[in-house]
Length: 119
Image 1: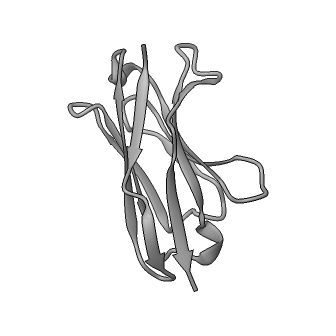
Image 2: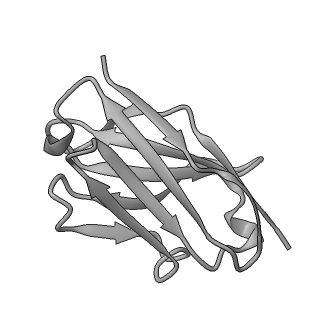
């Protein structure tokens, strides 16, 4: 049974930084791409960032590109999201997700961690 557990959320002032972590268990972590998503109040869940199984490839939604960095440590079964220069519009619940074996869908999701950015 795959489990994804996020941590690192909190309250931060605009311009500040946070690092989110997501620890995975239940299957071989290093075989699967990982993503971060977020959902703001009253809005649909949106994609934030993706990293390939070996960490060699990543991409971001335009609104966070240049401010957020996704990374992973396969020895720790952990994916990270470093968030710098945070803005109030980054306020959301952040979720990590794990790709399927075929890499077409996200099959597993964490419970989410709240990030709140004050003006």
